[in-house]
Length: 276
Image 1 (cartoon, helix red, strand yellow):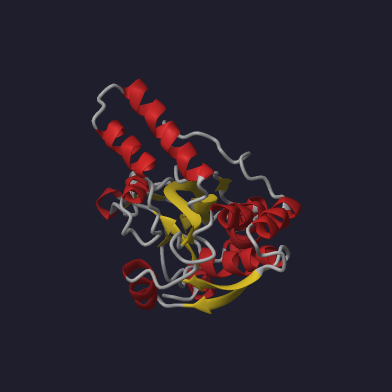
Image 2 (image 1 turned 90 degrees about the vertical axis):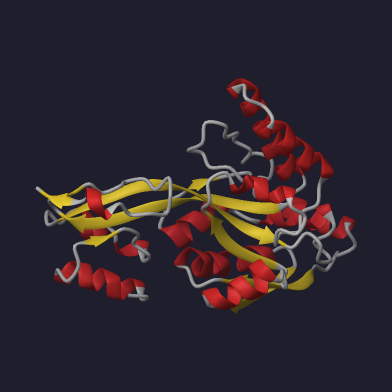
């Protein structure tokens, strides 16, 4: 059932027993006070980001990427696209991870700073770009908000909606894009930034050295230190513009047990489910 509202209607009608992820989060309140249902509000390992093609002008200039980061109000995106569900992040790491470092203060929402950086980079009047969005609700709704925030500092982003097959081909496979929004849900997928051919096209010898060092280290305290440095390196280079940790808000019929509140992996263990 691809339509978010159709999923909710089917849940309310009793046609389905479990909706693991509610796409239309503005509908969740009607389940909270209904004794027939249980609401499971948890978190995922998904880092939702504005991904940037680091090799595509003008985003090959770190000042432009930093301007983009300053232009974005993360909490406004969470409130508008996720009905308030989600935790702001400042780098590619989940707050659920023990090595997480809170870097949200590095780029506070500061349109004046964004405009100054754009002018310094030779774009006093801003520029035009594209924002390619996959079909997920957080991307489509979040993209509208992000585009408005970027336009306020002079970055005029034309939204191009894509289906998943198109996104995988154009963005992920061929890196034919400027900006996109997607949640990265693979465990420790931060290591992908060490590959210059990854679709973000981030190329940093210093970051690669940190990843190699972390993977060669067995001491947990030292690993935590190194991964903290890696997070800071990504943030300082503004390789991406982090938005929020993707929330997992589901609803199920009362009495259905064995459900995962959180999603450390994007799976649903049906064998563990059963009725009271």
